[in-house]
Length: 242
Image (cartoon, rainbow, N blue to C red; front, side, top):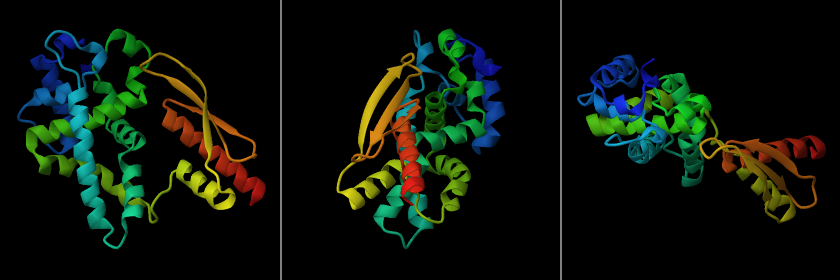
């Protein structure tokens, strides 16, 4: 598989061509500089010598995605105010949304990883997939301009954007609104534990509102664990208190 070679060969002509030929149709863009597309899959663990990882592209891709999604929302929901648009925006640019697109396009197959990262399940790592997705967006943008990047984003973000009739509320926001409205307090989050290697951490978080029993959950990031814990507590409160 193309992505299983080491980083020192990452920019070789054969690998560049293999990745590009398999992905260009899915990306709706034919690259003038196919090295950019290859770079989008180079994980920081493999960097050595003159080889650059995908981190700079990831930084740029995050900004390009935000601009295109904001433009799409502004056009799609002309009657919504800033608050609802902001909630839609947050749901569409968060890690989970990027990861879903990356999995749909099998980006994990093309990741260029160091052996340790490969052996620890780096191809299925949520952060690696989301980062690669942002880097691919940037690669398209640098190679083909805003129109090319927007074409890719509109293709894969249109369905989740229009699928939500009401602006989505994440669990943390919903819990905070309920706690403030019903009890005049804010939820309190507490880190219970953090373990795992630096590239694949595991967090356990507990959340409590007033004197209600706390709820705990785990995730690959603090944010994910907090969201999961808030979701559990919201469900418990709905069941116990109607």
